[in-house]
Length: 544
Figure 1 (spheres, one colour):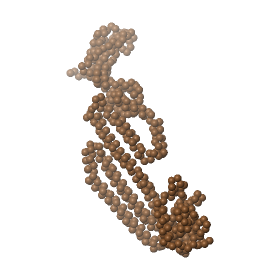
Figure 2 (spheres, rainbow, N blue to C red):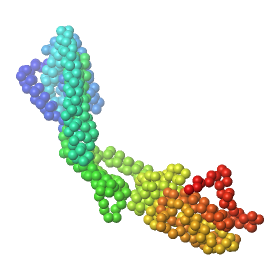
Figure 3 (cartoon, helix red, strand yellow):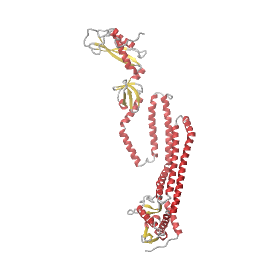
């Protein structure tokens, strides 16, 4: 074994500068120098919380483990006050150059290490030795009592400055918030009035306050990072934390910064697309609201169609906008994004078939004009007034004050009777049946039925009630009285008044009503004398 003399300091400095510049332009650890090349396993040797140099690893001896072992040997030598860093020497062999601290091997430099850096093995060993000497000197210097006391003082001063700056930032942003509240908020509210509510003041103000709060949070985080990295970097025991903090914060920020710069053109396009889409949606909403209010009219387009038509146009417009924006969304071309999109699409298609059928049925009924809110309708055995209509279900309130919810898909496949529409247009025909014996002249019966209709208030004005003879039964003739009604909501009340008046008229003229069944003639006619019409507890009306 032979030992070589140290090379001139100027030459070592030049080599060190060359390696530093090459390392600065090199790719990140573990990445290949060229596309398609196998990755290189390297790791930093950390001594006293500072990186010294990088070492290469192999599969049987990983770079991280090699770096930890080298760092442990250097720190062991540095903690020995009797060792002089200038006494580092080299042991040169055929395949390696060892850096020796007395009889202790600190690191062995192989040809493959030199090939990675692109220089001779001996030159690389000299550079490593010089860095080890500096690391030993720094290790001992940082642990001197005077140095530690001075850095404790610096840490206290830095803490005081940090607290003062933190308080100043809080006060500054509080002042900025009050200024914005006094001077900017009024201008935002006036902008909403001038734009006819296309821009909503509350949304703009929320965006401004959110931006200010975000700037405040970012400023405080930057201040905290600078404080922690500065204070932790003062002491050798916490310097590794400062170094790790730098890597944890800066590396992701650099990655995100590069990604953001690359994505910036697409982001600008998306922002413009969203802004234009929101503006157009506002205009579309204002347009359909004007149709719904009757300010804008089109032939054969009902005002109640405005809201559902707006929903359809809005859905189609948003879908078209998403189709345009999809290629510009971050990660849209990744397999994970495509897989999640496919999964959500399948999940939506499997779970929403009935919902979609009800939605389509709801829009179909809207344009079919089967009924509208307030109409009295009958759907199967459900009879009542339409209380609410949505794209999924229709709410019907029955005369018994029951709320029935009917799916729109069922209504689409069921007969719907709309009493209100006919009552409003031509008059709804109410009818009731009575059976009268053959011994009573049919002309008298029809006259009495028409008299009962004339006594019934609330019928359609200027309408002509009429009587039909429905059938000739075994024991009676079945008559049907038909009257006109222009308010479907009063159907039950009109039927009640009509039946009351029929009974009164037939009692007045001594004619028995033979329905619902007839067996034989009774000894006394089934009549109610007029003097018994108001038998207790009934009360006679006040004479006019």
